[in-house]
Amino acid sequence: MKSLTVPARVDQLDVVTEFINEELEKQDCSMKAQMQIAIAVEEIFVNIASYAYNPKDGDATILCEIGGNPLAVTIQFLDNGKPYNPLKKEDPDITLSAEEREIGGLGIFMVKKSMDSIDYQYVDGKNILTIKKNI
Amino acid sequence: MALTINSSWAGEKEVTLILEGRLDTSTAPQLEKEIQGLDGVTCLRLDFEKLDYLSSAGLRVILIAQKKMNRCGEMIISHVNETIMEVFEVTGFVDILTIE
Image (cartoon, rainbow over all chains, first blue to last red; front, side, top):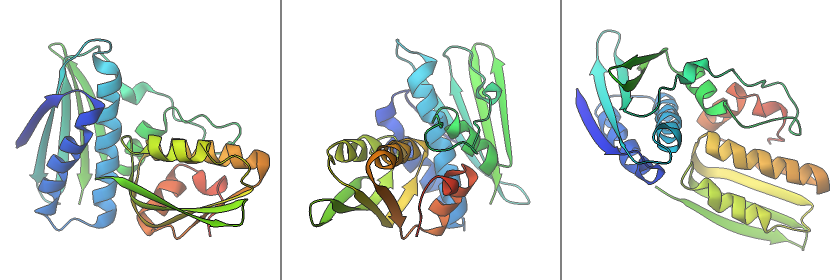
């Protein structure tokens, strides 16, 4: 399992994306799956960077493993910030008109829709969010 | 990993913004600034031919642009690739945008 630890800051997004893309490029992963995974990684990491330690600083650790049959990518996000379960966030109403729409909650909704599984645990003071997608 | 925005004007009130690269958390503020500067425009076209990535931060700015143009004209998005179209479909954005 490959691991990356970075300061939980939005300006580290490119480093995180690059880390995941490097792993995916070793596989024969479709463009569509690659983008869905990149979107999920962005939504989750930006969430951690924006809220986990705010207003203090802290780190985020990202673990990535590709394997199994069927072949799947599993990515885990760990932080020591405030307990936060993004799965509890209510799904946005995607039938509203442009005027009525709020953008909140759309990110995690996209993650739920595009991944095969998404799990949250709070263990020993750590938020652990795990996403898995068959590729 | 960046976003380049080129603009092409047809008269004073119709503009096409040609986006190239990624519309994500890091680059979305660039597009937001560009759109805020478009006062007096009645037809805004967004050309996505060279756009290869879109996240919810990008959707947020697209929604802002759509709301702005609903008040004073129209907004048309063109050359949307398959993966970005999927994002519009999953989020219901296909119903509030004009995509050609």
